[in-house]
Image (cartoon, rainbow, N blue to C red; front, side, top):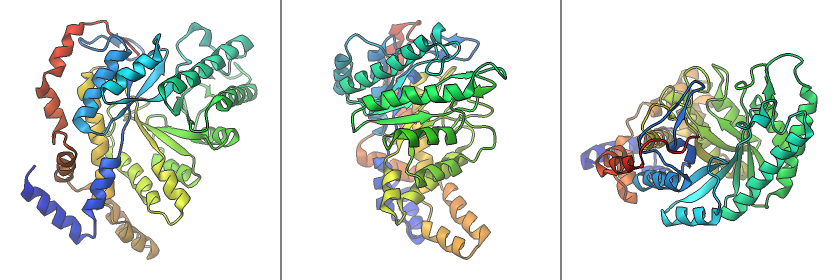
Length: 406
């Protein structure tokens, strides 16, 4: 990093009233969880594309995830998906993660890939299938206890394709009953993050279709249940940062599944299509972190940031690195917003002044800032370049093709 470039950047921000020492501390504190499935083979509805060198088992997934953390210093935990990451000995997997310098993060139950779930899992009209699905949720609670995880990410593909196909009100009851049983099995330190999606794979109705349904369910279940916002799970034009702000104010924003989309749930690299949206999401979170209400500040500090992407055509580790670096970039830019300037303009009803106070932070090149942060924590200033020169990508080619898929 050029000392001259950073000195100029520091002077520029000081003139705006920005405390760069505090900004750097916040960037260092940001942790982004990567998903085990993001390192495996994945694809579209039409085909799973096999790549050379992808992990063949959960242990190798953690080895790849450890590379991302080693190069960024920002990804100390790895989400697992059951049964994709099912092993005979979860204590052994936990120890393997520890030996690599990472830990097991959120546990994600899978209730959408078995033939029994063609008409739903926890909302299936067949009581035996509902029982099977609920037992899987309870199995995941036991796994979380073994590996030391305290977060569950729950997404359900349950829904219907045609009017009249199902009893929607009955399914609402069944959903609550299943999650209540899981909730009661959780330890006091655990959190249940409830995800929503307005369509796909169900095309007429989805049992948890939007943030309001997830919010309502979380409120009924109790304080350990919160809403998870997947940035790709909304209709076109949705103001996601508004949803984020509302949930923050209600102390019910549990976390994110970060990705990017152009049309639907595209699961593209986060920040690759609409980086300004990601920036504005972080703006609302940072604004809440500076609220006078300590409960709002606490809610903003208790957010789980997770990547959830399907790297279909990209090399897995570089794609994950790019996602993490994009998150850091937009977070750093949002930290440069002078909130006092924004609030002053808001109080004066200065529309363009308030908009300018937000937008001009987005327009800064934060490369000198991020380089300084990385130097201070002892990771490469250019993690992508360091990875491509490390030889790791070539070394894993020995795994061949046919590794673990979703």
